[in-house]
Image 1 (cartoon, helix red, strand yellow):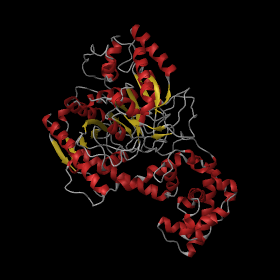
Image 2 (cartoon, rainbow, N blue to C red):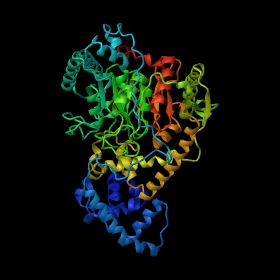
Image 3 (spheres, rainbow, N blue to C red):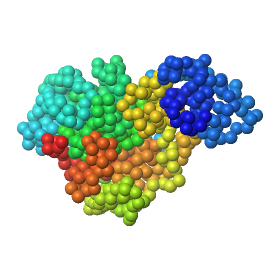
Image 4 (cartoon, rainbow, N blue to C red):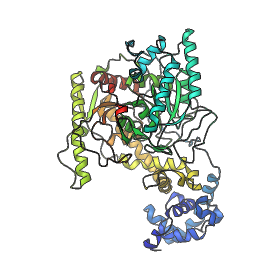
Length: 620
């Protein structure tokens, strides 16, 4: 069949057939579409899935086509030898598929980012918060109260100057007021919240104080299971999905006395900021998306609609929306926070962490949610000992020198390349100012470079492969067509493509990942913390190697900033521009999250960018 003939056929149905054929997870090319399609029943052709009896007989021609895509050569004699084995392999695949395993079932293997010889600190020490802040001016100022830090809110609730019920009602009212424009709530948990708040007030009045999160309203990214409420994963087709249990993180925050007010939006199945109810918006420019996939978590915190929120990151889903919305995010070391009861996207990369207005807020939340739960086998028995007075000047601090350099010229002559160049030149001054501020704080910055030759980006197909497995049934059933995004960059297409990433290549990529882990470990033998812009090669590298990051606001672009590529309402390319936030990232060694946060907090207290807030009622 010619490419022209193939282009007129249904590519999605074809890829579904190819994936069902298996061939050791290699790819059947377009020239075999006709043969495979002819063997299907009408139901199978409509995306209802196929059984072994409905699939085309495996032929030497199929092996040739698959081998060409897989990049290997097979002789005629070898093909003849392979036929029986391939049929048995396809039959085994069919048996495994028939098990219809839910997303909550993890693979038998567990990713461990800790290099050989590293000794984890396991002794837990009492948390040391910053000194009690002055909060008398907040109690009677509703707007200031809405944007108060968790540390300030905790002092107000503890001293009973503000009740948890009053705080909860205030945040619920703000969520309802701004949700029509920001689209950050999927489900309100109002009854649960008011009951929790009343219980918190009663306990505190009786002299029982659970700690700094007691009575503080928060929002959950809607991939965390909450009993009695839908858990939609932001995806069309899952709107009524629910579980009869609470996620481990939800249980721990309940135990800390925190008050869950809403389940917040996330990009469908953790992709960007578009969910089945629309696109979550950036409070600094409501014509822009909030980025994602922790879209609602970052947006709601930025808009002063929750005290803090929980997000997740696999490859940028805390860092990117925190940057876009001008808030603080803590992406913990992989294996620090249990993911039990959370949607799985990539078992070897998913991480759960807090998003809040300040670093100490994140540290207080982290103190409540980390540690083994007896279910998530990736979680280590390591300690997160928050000390607001940690001697951060003792830390060796590096910076990624190349990432802070002002580019000399555009990489090409296209309008897009010129626009990217203008953006990078404009934003470079914020990074330079950050380095100057750190030096004025007494930090001796050590120039560093990312390791070369480790091909971090080429390892990331393991993410899509694991995600395709996590949502295997979605693809096989054809229900992927219900998802909002259907471009070549959205999950339905990525899941189908990933099905043809061979098992051998997946293992090889994981071996390459081991080498990358060793290279990153050497970097953190030389320094304790690395300062960098939020994106770049480090984002991929550290998500693959499990290193922690703290993302902090680093100022606002001025009115002279280059305009976005597109300024249309909700346009995915409407990003940046005048009046929007920039950020700075602090990276740390594995399980050094607390001391990493201490340095980030010191920078934040010195600069004060986290105190800026969007002018919500003046923006369209």
